[in-house]
Every structure is written in C-alpha cells, then in structure tokens.
Length: 233
Image (cartoon, helix red, strand yellow):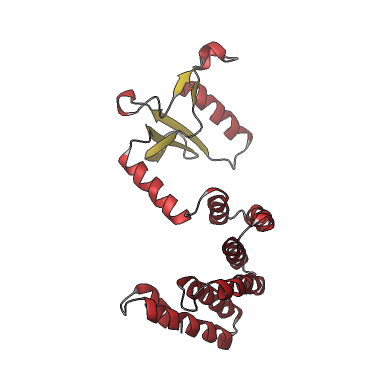
C-alpha cells in the first residue's frame, strides 16, 4: 500500500479517538536478499477493490525485522516503524526459530500445548490437555499430560490444584520408572515449588529433599540444577 494511503487510514482513526497512538509500518523489500519460493508476495492491484492503493499480499508466515522505531516530527502520537523483510535463510531468524523450538520441545499437540501455556492461553491449553488425556494410550503419555496440567495450574497461581495433578503424574512415574529417574526428580521439585508458594514449607522441604537425593546421584557437584535445589532447600 502506498505510504500516502496508509497515512490517511492512520490519521482518520487518530482524529476519531484522541487516546489512540498511530503506528505506520514502512516495509523495505530487497528481492536480492530473499527467496520468493520461501517468502512469496504479490502485487494485487488487478484484484483489489481499489487498485490505486497498490496493495501487496504477503504469505501468512512472512517475517519482518524491526530496523527502527521513531516518533514523527509533526505528531507525537504517530510512530513510524521501519521494517525489512526476511526469509528462512536469514541466519538470525534461523537461530531464533531453533531456540524457540528447543524451548517449546515436543511434537504435534504437545508442542501446541506448551505454546499455549507460554502465551497465557490457559483455558485453551487445559481443554487440549484434557482431550489428549482421554486419548492417551500409554502410562508415559498420561504422566506427561498430568504434569503439564500441573504446570498450567501453577502458572495460574492455583497451587493446590497444581499439586493434585503433579501427584497424579508422580503416582504413574513411581510405578513405571526407576526410583532414581530424572523425571521423578523434576516432579518432586515442582511439587515442592507449589508447596513453597502455598507457604507449606515442611511439605516443600520434604519434596525438595527427595529431588536432591536423585540429583546428587545423577549430576555432577557443580551442576546448576543441583545448586538451585540446594538453594531452594
């Protein structure tokens, strides 16, 4: 879209509502630096209701890098944001994408559930996990889902409910895993954190100690995770 047309839309909205801050995005597209097969876009003048607006249609996954943000000299309620287009071959974008994948972990619906938790969509995440729980076919799956429901309740500040879900996960893990398995340490630690937040310090200490005993067997003395458990105790 032409800058002039974009400005008209922004200024019209700002006049209607004095509390609104206007933002206009100025996009730079250097075709020599991107692959159109990865980041397709097209002029749609011929298909637009208003051809003179010179609109460009971008694919859904198009990513832009923010180069600069500044207030305009004429209006302190109007900001300009300079953007440049990137594609999958951009090294910084690839690094960021890989890091996000590592943090979210898992595959398919598990990854979706974690992503929902990260962005605070708790109701949708709980609905998804409850559905996954109904269809879980192994103890490992059920233990994982109960654990994630515990984390969900923890993030909501509903610590008693978090403990209930963690304990359901723990019950399965104790039956199916060696007593010194790292997954048990993780569950013990999360139960302890929930009790800690509830002010039930004796219960918290009990579970911290259980986590510590497992971690001392499997981790080096200078492991940061073990150090954190000592600190919590």
